[in-house]
Image (cartoon, rainbow, N blue to C red; front, top):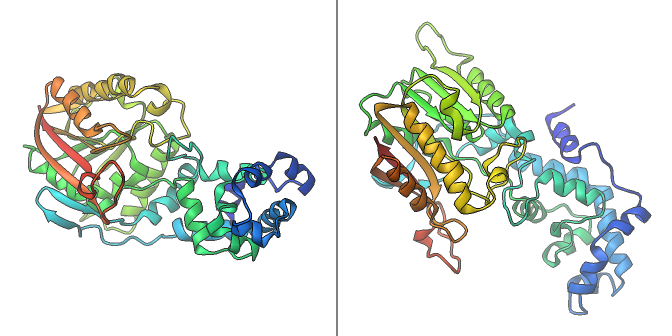
Length: 385
């Protein structure tokens, strides 16, 4: 079985498209036609005002082209196996770095099963896998009926626009760029007396394994609640050093701990020079594969701050060497909350001193009704004890 077919089968979860009569009974398309389609709509015109033609057109597209469509989804996001150089970053100034994507396909390829079961956005809470399973049973994602794409659907054309819209509507999980991550680790070293050991309080799909390479760490440890992602971290670590002459290049040791970061100090009996966390954006990112995700355990933003983040800060302080540095990466403004500021305030309340902030700005400036382009960025906050 090819990797592509493995992906297609995993996303479909062993299910097939229902027979058309049963599928019609389950589908939401009749309601969509009634509520959203009028005589000026391209869907109305192409289907000659006949809702049955509308419904059957979409059913036939799924019957004839779904595997082709999923194959292109896989090829566009999950196929990269080659690793590009990660030492180059686009610096605006010493405290501002441009977040350009770097090797996301590699990490998605390794972790695709975990990534496609994540919803990504609390407003949708729908992963690629759930979206396809629902579609096979009649509950159609907007990708397959929205006006801008319906001409392609009607003509049986699997276009790049359909694939792109589907990925966006399902919020395909983003992957932190290892080139930016490595630059941030170099920034930590400027504020630390020693730089031989580091604890990543989130696994970030294995990116820390690569980002910390060639930085002379002797110990690299990772905490996460998804044991499958931690297993993939070891896979990436093994591949990273597989072809090296270990007589001359001793890799760091990697140890992983499957535990919530809030209580990691009860399990780990070490001290670290660096501790860094890239936590979920409260309820903006919906992760699966564990019942210990902070997004599931803590239902309000205030609860998340106090019971996830404050406890993670305290645990980090307990695990940090006296001259070590603690840091986290978070969006400046997330779902109407200034999250990086709120989280930094808690770190200061728990005895840390803020020594630097690195802005990570998007490659392309994006407008929205709440923020100017320059306000939409992430922050790496760096603290000393």
